[in-house]
Structure formats: structure tokens, C-alpha cells
Image (cartoon, rainbow, N blue to C red; front, side, top):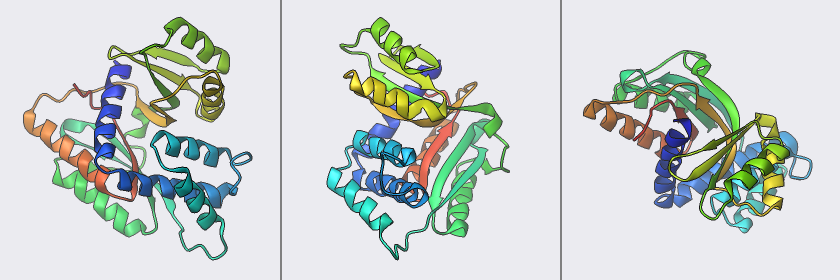
Length: 242
């Protein structure tokens, strides 16, 4: 079930990003900037930066853009200072939602996030109100076409993966401990595998279906508002999307 729901989320993200690539570049640019400021501009010693660069390339961010952002963030007097904040709340019918943001204005972002929850039948809660319903994993997804499942599973587990899930929509999902993601990804990449996505995610322990059409409409609109907000980096939820 988790693989199916996860891939539905990825497809939704892909459809969204295909139509708004500049916004995706902006969000990943912020992640690169934060990674550089926290650990330096050299990805060989800054594993967080290395992971974000891999994410940028998976989202087709041009190398020139990546290098320009790194140089700007590493330069003296760079004014970009972003704070990482996580918000938690409930969507329609109690769907658990985690919102990850990078912002240079905490009040603005908190106001926006609260507004989106309220407007579409949910409410923003206190820290910890839903995060206990999720587990944090490194998640690598690979399209099943032309991939030998047994060989991939063997390679993934040998590289240090903790779980391997076959999705009913033809997607393989490899899970790792969060700190092991980069090493497993690099090992599989060296063996010729290409990825649909590879990043640390909040994976729900259980999923909830929405049957009311108004709830489904409102949940989609809420997710659209989060996606369109430059401050919001990721949204995780336990809605079992069809």
C-alpha cells in the first residue's frame, strides 16, 4: 500500500513541476544555499550539499544554475539567510500533514501555512501533533521497466538498504536509514541505475482514504497552495490517493 500511495504522490509532484519548473528551481536553490552555508561549498566533504545537488540533477536543474547558486551562497556578504521550519496539522477529515519550509520571514510563512489549512477544511496544530504517525526514511524510487527485480534487490541490500518494496504500478521503492541515503544512492548509481527520486522523506505508518468529494477537492486545493508557495519545500501526508 505504501508504495502505491507514495508513487501517486510522486506522479502528482511531477505533473505539477512539469508545468512550473522555475518554481522548482527556486525551491531547490534555497536548499543548496542552506546546505552551503551550513557545511561549505565542497560536496565531497559536505554530504548534505551532495544530496541536494543529486536532487537538483534529478529535477533537471542545469549544472550552470547549481554552480551559480553555490558560488553566491559561499560568497562574502551573501544576504540569503533561510530558516528551516516544520509545521504540522490536519487536512480534511483528519488527514495528517507535515509541511517543511525554508523561509527568511517566519511570520509570513506561518501565516500562509495556517491560512491554507484553515481555508480548505483543516487546521494547523502544535509541533508533534502528527509527526508521530510518520517514520523518517531515505527513499529511492526506480522505474521497474528493464530492471531485474532480484538483482536490484540484491544490489540495494548489499549497498545498505533496509527495505525493498515492489509497487503495483511498476515502481521499486528502496528504503534506507536517513543517514545512509547518500551512500546507497551513490552505490546504485555506480552500478548503472537511474532514479525517479532519492531523498529523505516522512513516510506515514498508516494511510487514510477520503471518500467525500468535497474533502478530496479541498485536499487537492490545499496541496496545490502549498506547492505554489516558494517557502514550502516539501509536504508529506497520509492521504491514500487513488
